[in-house]
Amino acid sequence: MRPRLAAATGLFAAALLAYAANAAPRIAAVPEAQRSAEQRALAERFAPSGMTNAVATYLQHPALAEAVLPYERYLSADSTLPPRHRALLTLRTAWLTRSEYVWAHQARRALDNGLTRAELARVAHGPAAAGWSPFEAALLRAADELHVDSFVSDATWGALAAEYETNQLIDLVYGVGLLTMHAGAINTLGVALESEVMERFPAGVPYTVAAQWTNQRLLGKPPRIPPLQPHEWTAVQRARLDPTNSGRAANVFATFARDPPTDALRNAVSGHIRGGSTLTPRHREIVIMRIGVLCRSEYEWAAHMRAGKGLGMTDADVERVARGSDAPGDAFEAALLRATDELYRDDRVSEATWAELATQLDTRQLLDVLIAVGGYRSASMAINSAGVQLDANMAEFRFPAFLR
Image 1 (tube, rainbow, N blue to C red):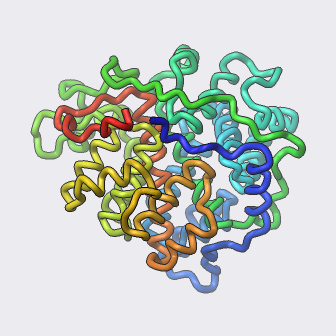
Image 2: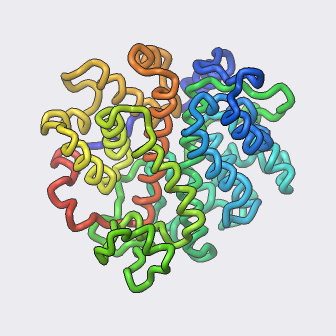
């Protein structure tokens, strides 16, 4: 069964862009005069990036802002990727997610890093456009594959791995994912572009994606990035991976722990979702399990189906998450499933679904829905592309047969 939902293309994509340009923000930015000391401190740290309206909106939930904004700054300005490559990936991700807010800010940064306006327009045309080097075309193709398939194909991965070392490959896949998370949140919230930001999407370029859904995964095959073994752990990594000295660690953590400083930034995002979220544990696990299904990430499904069962989810509950919002059951949980599907398909939650969520969720909870879905979409992209294998205790929590 193919869970991939129809992607927005052509006139539908144009309609979404027009809606985003004209809609009032669904959650207001916190005015400067009304900010607490904590909110003022966060704004002083992160608003200088230029994304002042996005930062001011995230200030509605300071704990979330503290978790997600440091990694956004790292991806945009400090990652292990060369600045030109970083610019190509961030711009292509902004285009694919139809996020003019993200595009405008990244375009300004890209021009400062030496890209030309002609190259900006070429990014919108995609990896098949004439003029890219083979490696730059592979970078853009990876962004498209991650957006559509939550997986970098063998051919594209091989081209990237010929030039990039492991931490750069991790920064690429996680970076596309986390920027997708921010784009989906910003699109959904209707964050307005700042008056001084003049960049816009290139005019007259049709929306196309140079990738297709394949369902190719690496389960049962050698991982592309092997997890660190206990004898390889540094003291910092041992404290992170095995605080109880059991001599083992989950494959996902041991895979992405190769660069502890950057791993700490990633873990701040997932740590907020798992431990700092204002969502009920059941609602959190519902959206994480659902995005695992959509991304075909059996690792995420197994980990969080196990967590859901521990919270009391029944077999019927689990099957409903796997089948989606049309399956019979609780109406509000159907809205959560539908919001997850819309973020995955359209990179924004529809007006009707948002209104339904807002009947039971407050501002911080609404923000936490967006970050939970986007954060675990990013994790799924990385897990799939790195070939993280299931842990030994996951055998009974695999996808149901109709999803395999």
